[in-house]
Length: 103
Image 1 (cartoon, rainbow, N blue to C red):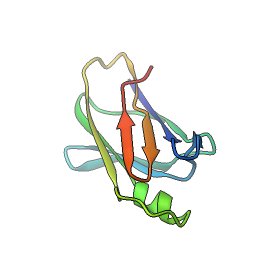
Image 2: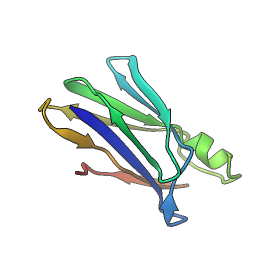
Image 3: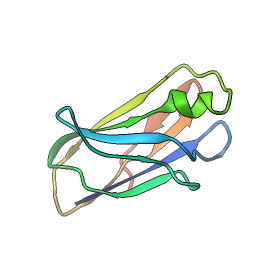
Image 4: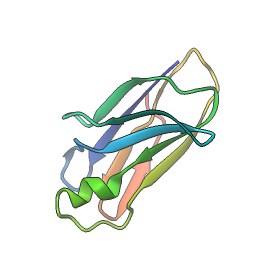
């Protein structure tokens, strides 16, 4: 199984490069990284069951001197089929965010 994420800065209309992200399971950190120039991280391996992606949105916006409401975004998701690829995108702005299961 594999996991990827893609962060888009909806306020700017472009990828959010430089967002620190970590993958957690049951309080353990499984992986950590920073989004690339295209706002992506890939190649992570989640575990079956409940997982969490945590995005340092406060750090991303602070580095750009932008006031933001959410200092961190956590997305909980369930890995059911170990043979599948899981893609969890984040659409981000200083005062809102959304996510969905991608492909």
